[in-house]
Image 1 (cartoon, rainbow, N blue to C red):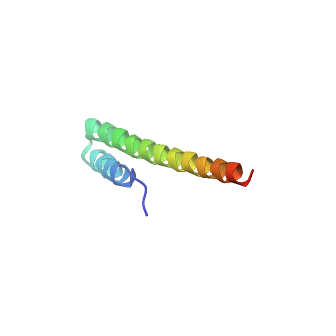
Image 2 (cartoon, one colour):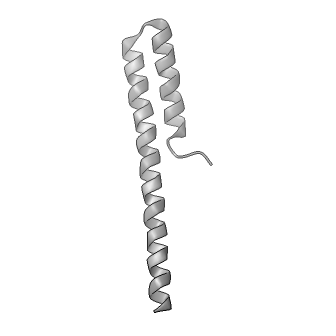
Image 3 (cartoon, rainbow, N blue to C red):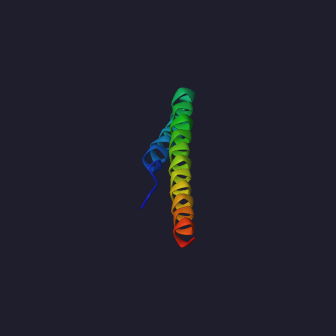
Length: 65
């Protein structure tokens, strides 16, 4: 399954390419921002998964003790 930020990253990349083709610097900048937003969402999603995994690991350890 794609990360939560995949849609934003794809839209951002498309805006960047369109801006580059048309010479629209503002559209390129919007695309960079949207792509960064998607990457941030993916990073936060990964961090959440890591936290959940750590929590489960600690829970199993305390249950064994």
